[in-house]
Image (tube, rainbow, N blue to C red; front, top):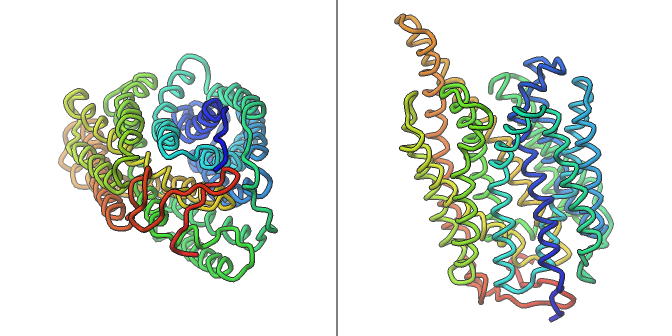
Length: 500
């Protein structure tokens, strides 16, 4: 076993900073969007593309980014991703019109797809001791989970007190500090690259398949599920992704070796995490609207209203998750974690116009944060657990992909459910007369609670998957499926997996 890198904790600071920047970017722009839309004259129809352009490029290219990190070197990919992200953010902040804004958002997504898998796989190859690895992934998991809510606070502050453009410019110092730090501090363990040739058909099929899938969901949100283009996108994505899986089974050096997916623990992580993110992303959106429109909170106050969830996540991942991860099997953290989050969601189905923040929204957020933080922690670590070092980038990209695709699906699916419930309520109640404004607010709340019921079910399903699929032992000792932690040569984390 090689010596652990003495600078690994310093490296974690810069990796965490980069991860924070990428996660922030998924939500910070949401708050700034109304002002940016007005300034740049973006139509209501195209407004969602400011969010979607980022999600499409990011979600579509993640697997490719993970493979580049394995091939080209994780540190080099990480630094390149950071510099590119800073440039794309500068372009977004300086945007003079719709086209420039959408182009900048797509570019951010492209570089984010290089950056995110490289960051997670650097952690996987640098932290080889089980206890340290638990701590490192705890910090990373807290940021991955809580960063979205931090984005809402920061977005509110920047939009209210400076200008929406600062929601882009704020990335530049993050990126520069992380890139410089990574360049001077990170030393990638030797012998962990995967130099086999790039699988071009796999890159093309996976990118097109994921992009059409994400596009199908975002289109469903604006045009409805029965729209012919929406249906066409879903059919195309199924065909492309099926062709991708067949290609990966046949080619000599696949983009996504199926062994990464077919091991039941990792498969269970990708599936349950993707589902949990679907529930979370929809909720961020509804609570933001509920607090701003129904409750009349300012952007800053709305951001702060999300603090209990962030606190819950940080406590869940660094105190509960990280401490228990080396003592109890991951499924005993993930399944109860998702269930606790589902209970928090269940509280939110009781929302009404006059609901008290302290009485209902605060405890619900604490439960959600604690539950998700506790579950995220072992999930992040398990996602690369038992992967040979040469596959670390691709395995990391799969976690990010399940999060990105989950986020896009969550926003579209839950939004559509909410919109139809709102319309149905309006149709039923407008004719009765009464205060129109009140009926509209009531209809909105009715829409949100209908969608939140779905989110409860989705989280319960995530808990069930975590409980049934994940069967490895705790990550400080021998696994239940016979995969004991055994360190390979040159800092590689090599653990025999069942599906070779």
